[in-house]
Length: 205
Image 1 (cartoon, one colour):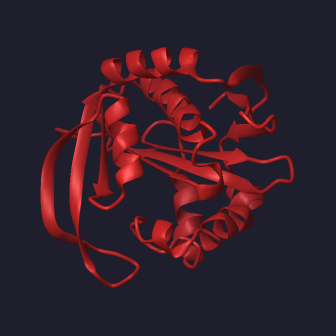
Image 2: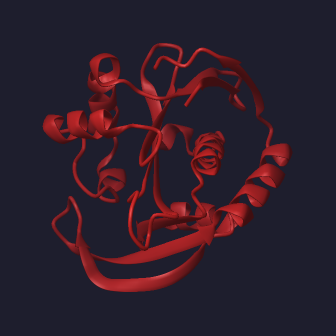
């Protein structure tokens, strides 16, 4: 990502959307995941707030070609949201990227999910990604509604496929959409949202 993005929230607060760096942001990223409530953590693939080794490896993977990560940073330096996108560079699925977004429930209705999605889609376009996919637990209804609003459709339901942080088995819904349709919907939605954006060069690479 070659730009840092500022976003003024509906409550007037200003946040940054940027790429995190392992030597600078690991502790804040771990703290973000650690303070998420249990009902949100249960929708994560693993308890990211506890696994420092995985957090370090994931940040080191970010290369803007097959792995992307963006965080939303508050004025006090803490993180309010995290978004990732990954793809295999070779083989049948090289045109597909897997997108995941996690938002602190305090900011659920502030437009952060839409804003970070917008930036991930911009990155995907530059990299030649043609299709986006994501996996979501059936109980994560707010995220499913968000994805459907962006034009994602439910393709497959895998019964009792994921074991959550709660130790229980959950159905997983695989949702997907082609990038062009997502981009059109995101553009329309951004114009309707009560959020203002400005961009300037200087992302911390």
